[in-house]
Length: 528
Image (cartoon, rainbow, N blue to C red; front, side):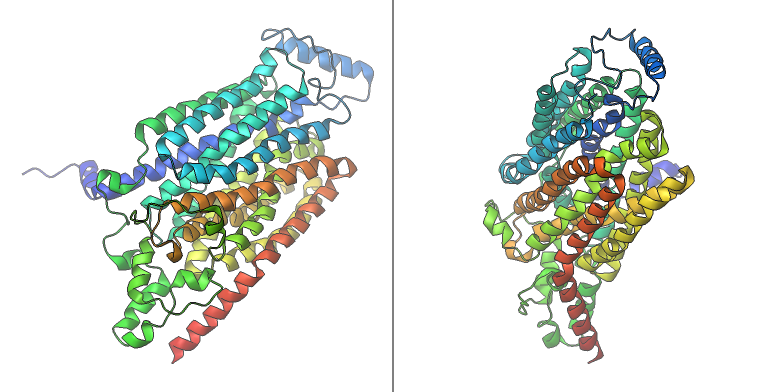
C-alpha cells in the first residue's frame, strides 16, 4: 500500500470535531471582523470632512481647486466650502463630528441591552444574518451622502443611529456561538487570539477607507458596507450555532481533564489522595468570581461545569437574573471605563495624528492601525496571563495600572516625532485593548456559563449583552467627551482617559482582593 501524501496525513491527523471547531473559530473571527471593518471609516474620513485651511487665502484657494479638480471625475459638487464637507467645515466641527460618534455609540449601547434578550430567543444564524445585511445597508447609506451631495447633518446622524442599532446583533451572537463550541480549558488564550478580530477589522477598515478617503470618501463607506453584507450571506450559508446540531461533542476533548484549568486539575489529583478534603474545595471559576464564598461544590461538579455547554436548560434568563450572577456588575462597570478609552482612540486617533504630526488623512489612517496591531498582542497576552495565573480580574487590573502612565507618556512623546509615535501606539494599543478584550470574551463566557445557570447555554447571550452594553455606554461617552474637550487642548483629552483607566481599576479592586485571598487560601491548603 502506497504511503499517504503529507497533506492528506495532516488532514486525517485531526478529528471531525476538531475540523469543525477550527472552521467555526475562523468563520466567527471574520464575521465579527467585518463588523469592526464597517465601523472604522468614520474615524478615517473625519480628516476629509473637515480640512485645516492654510493661513494664506491664496494657498487655501489653490488647495481647494486642486481638491475639486481631483474629484471632478467622480461628482461635481455644489459644496463651496474651502475647509471640507458642509456642514463639517465650520469652527465647531469637533462637536459635530463628536455628535456622529455619539449617535452611533448611544444607539449601540441602548440596543445592546435588548439585543442579547432578543438574540437568545431567536436562531443565531438568522439573527446575525439580518443584522449584517442591515449593517451593510446603513454603512453604505452614510457614503451615499457624498454621491447624492447631501449636506444635512441629520441625514448623517440618522444613518449612524440606525447603524448603531443593527450592529448590536453581532457581539452577543458570535460570543454565544464560540462559547457553545469551546469549553473553559485555556479559554483566556483561545479567546484572546479569537478577539484579535477586533483589531484585524479595525486595520482592514482603516486601510480600505484610507484608500479612497482623499479622492472619493463616499467609497470609504460603501465598500465596507458591501463587505459586511457579503459576510452576512456567508453567515447564513455556513454558521453552525451549536456542536450538537451536527452531532459533535460539546467540549474540545472527550477527557474532562483536557479542558480543566490548573486549579481544577489540582483538585482532581488531590481526590485520589484525600477525597474528603477535595469535596470541600471550591470550583476554580467560583474562586475567581464569586463573592458569597460557597463551599459545597465537589470535584465532580467542577468537571461538569467546566464544559458549561449543556443545552438542557432551555428557558431564557431574565435581565435581573443575569445581573445577580456574581461578578457581572463589577466587570460591566469596569468595561464601561475601559471601553471609553478604547473607543476614544478608535474614533479620534487618526484626527489626533493629523493635528500633531501634520499628516494627510490617508497617512494618518494608515499610521493609526499600529494601535490595533498593539491591541492584537495585548488581547493575546491578557488571555495567556489570566490562564496561567487563573486570575481574570488581577490580569485586567495589572494592565489598567500600567495603561494610565503609558497614556501620559504617549501624549508627551508623540510630539517628539514620528518614530516615537509609532512605539507608543504599539505599547498603548496593547495595554488599552488587553483588559477590554479579556472582559468582553473570556470573562463574559465564564460568567455566561456560571454554575448558577445549571448549564443553560441560552443565558450566555444575555450576560454578554449586559457586559458589552454597559461598556458601550462608556464607548458612547468617550468620543463625545473627546469632541467637547479637544478644543481646549489634546492634553486634556489624555487626562480624561487616564482618569477613566483609574475608575476601571477601582471597580475591580474587590474582585482582585477576592482572587488574592483565594490564592492565599489555596497555598495554605496545599501546605497542609
